[in-house]
Length: 119
Image 1: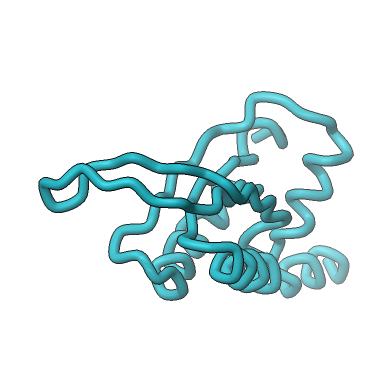
Image 2: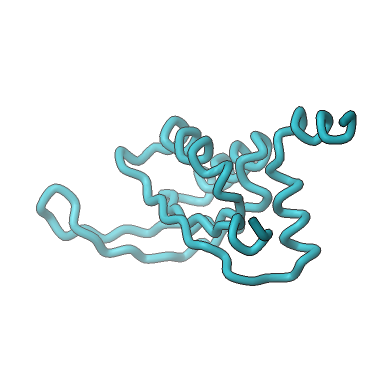
């Protein structure tokens, strides 16, 4: 499978910058996201429990791989303050080869990387 087909851009939102930063650090430190870009100033309008709501939020753009998505989803569910956090995974169909290599290496389990080097 090529680097293009395994890379994902994952979208989620947070209620404020403090929470967004905490989520970003948690996911990057756990090697579940290679990078988390925060975009404050988002205004969201949505239906929740039958009522139209609106709120200020921070958009997180998470770069990861298909392999890491299940663990990212589980970690986000545990760490996120929302009952139902946004989680949309979009396939990456192209990109810079060096960047995609870095992304893949950044979310690789350190034990996997070490084992490959020993083989």
